[in-house]
Amino acid sequence: MGKWQTKETLLYLLTRLVDHQSVTGSYPEIALAEYIHLQLQDLTYFKKNPDQLALHPTSDGRFFVTGLVKNSTSNKTVILISHFDVVDVEDYGQWKNLAFSPYDLTEEFYKNSDKLPLDVQNDLDHGEWLFGRGVMDMKSGLALQMSMLEKAALGEFDGNILFLTVPDEEANSIGMIEAVPILVELAKQYDLEYTACLNSEPVFTKYPGDQNMYVYSGSIGKLLPGFFCYGRETHVGEPFSGLNANYMAAEVTRELELNQDFCEIVEGEVTPPPTNLMQKDLKEEYSVQIPHVGVTLFNVLGMESSIEEMTNKLFKSVEKAAKRIEEHYIERAKAFSKLQSFKPEPFHVRVLSYHQLLKRAVELFGEPEIKRRQDYIMANYKDLGDRDLSTRMVFDLASLCKEDGPMIVLFYNPPFYPAVSSRKDTFIQETIKEVISYSQKQHGVTLKHQHYFPGLSDLSFVGLERTKETIKPLSDNMPLFGQSYNLPLEALEQLKVPVMNLGPKGKDAHKWTERLELTYSFGTLLDMLPFTIKQLLR
Image (cartoon, rainbow, N blue to C red; front, side):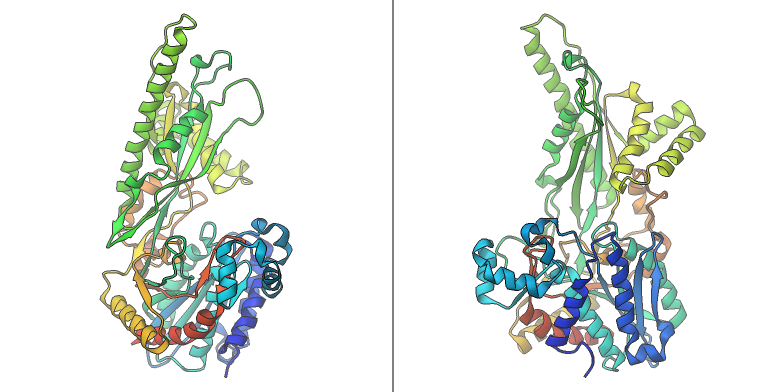
């Protein structure tokens, strides 16, 4: 019968996975990888083939897990990918201590349903739901994929299954990025032909109240551009002698926030517009000097637009913001000059890319000095996160080139997610048609096909849609690229595996009301996933 082949045994496995409080970057994230490895070791297949199950250390001391079940008569192989890290639980408030105890939390929510949002109350009245951090995103999908690996070990599939589960998906995807060369190596070592990569991220709603169920043939891409604003310092008593970086950042945000010009449409699917993820000035203490240095970061999603196209569009938008800053300053200065006699002097806000700023700094101070300064920052600011470290690198260069200011510098931050899609892959499209038909006939469930999973996923790293040269606008303008952030471009070009995502039903990922619907997720899907895998191995 197996360990994880019923709804009840899957529920038990899920609760054990959730018990491990594997918040990204925490020690339990390491412990959970070891637990998964330990559980898979117990399968008879891996007792006989221990070399085909492995814990792989990442460069920062975490682990990802691979498990290969090989059919000796075939080299066709489906990769099952998942992640086991979760976001933190600060949003749970009074229920924070129960966030990793799904049964207890669910019981408390039923007892206190009147304190929950109306849509959650409605679900409690009309479905079978389990609450807790990670039950939806994505430990239920992980549990299902462990079940599929066990099926493979029991001989159910005519082909090979390569199981891969990784840490850090919720932050920088270090686990998946460092797994890419391993996937290439395993293909060579065991003579594997990767026919598809199947993820089991949960269904994401497209809008509030969306009740549709989706199957995906790709995953949306993400850029994280930053805009470093370098104004002019002055005393607050002489504001027109300087330029406030907070105001500069505000104008950039005004231009980019929810700007629908950045929405991309592919066969009726639309990317959400940009939204701000961080904005702050860089004054370290209070004083009556205006903040003359600041930064603002944006989430920018895309599907088929190239990095070069997106960079050019961002550049033009920020040039508009720079023009408004100049005009606003003169307008306010003229108004003030009617109260206090003085002649306002116009100025120009330059818009530069990080690459242009770096080139200018090298012209002024020489390449050895700039390299020395960057090496110093990398060595002495390790406690900063990637975003703040990137900002520090730009800050140092801008301060060297301050005579060229005021300026706004466009730069890129980790993480980067390339968009990936198999919408033009005949094999994947035919498979999805078969899965949709099977779902309707066997279970009365209507699945809708979407070309891009909207929630970002590690599917982005199973192959480059374009050549590695197309990454150059990103690598040239990302301070940490080649330093603490790398992409295995050679391996990505070798991989290029068609992708698909079929996962459980849940709601409110990354919210305190995160929940999993059990009837579909551990009932219907437990039948549909084996059918899908068989189609992908045919």
